[in-house]
Length: 405
Image (tube, rainbow, N blue to C red; front, side, top):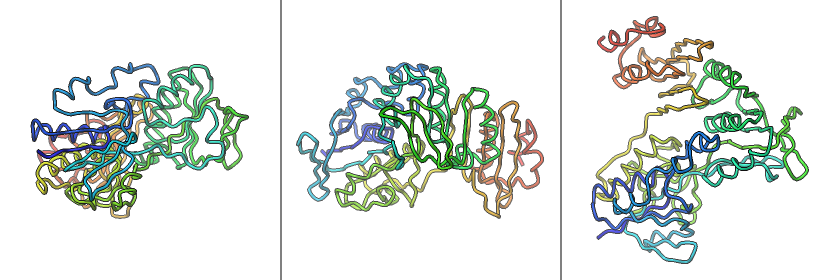
């Protein structure tokens, strides 16, 4: 019987394990995880910091679920060496583990930019449950927080610190917040929602140093401005955790390079999730991790049986209590795109559609939940909506008329 080994127990690793268990009941199936915890939902860590969600509730399944699925999970078992030729890996405690098929699902690491003073007490990144525990404990006894990074995780962390009663400032390097999911006009609506929560935002903010004598005192920008802080959380993105792949001699670019079957440059070694670079893209989103994991699992069980051709960039996020959906080429600004916008800042609503050759290829929907499904449908069908541009921007468009057109 083939022995399947998965390195990493994030969403990609656990999804792949579940898929293998379903495809081949009774398979010899193992997950090796560096952390001492079974899979938990990383997007819920800010809610845990805020006290909105109990720690027990962020775990995906109880330990007995893995046993019932026939998945053997090895916690606190970091892998330090991979030998693709020998079809073997080595754990930190020296244990050698053979495999027939292997999945790299090592995910990403929080990236800390080279900021002076970044090692001071009171400076954190947020990627793991241990990070969240440390931030939550430290934040109980301080008054002012600065979050460096105005992406989704940064804003959710700011909301969590605010919920704990801290004064909070968000510093964003880009000209506006959430530049991967929003355009400038949509970000302005989001900034208004943040102001109502008493969260200060500063954009085009280039952080130069974290000041203090031992502990954190303030954050200084390149232009000389200083923002008082007792705690600083750096939320400046993640980088694929490619150290093991690089040690094993696999082809690595920004992530571990995989083909359309999610196979790496080594036979019987696959990669999925935040560590994988597919078609030149490291997606860094949950839908892509799930789709890649399922395709990789299918190919591990039956090589060549599944093809991964990419994931439509589509994310629906809860950000500071607002629902944001970004689809396709949501922030593209090329000359061949027609941009349609409807902003309602007072009600925290924003709708943007990007059209190419009369077809919707991108959308931003902030607190426009009721319109998300029909717009996605029009995108997927490639419907020509060029005759209905005014209708598209009405407060409540007659979607059935458009979809039937």
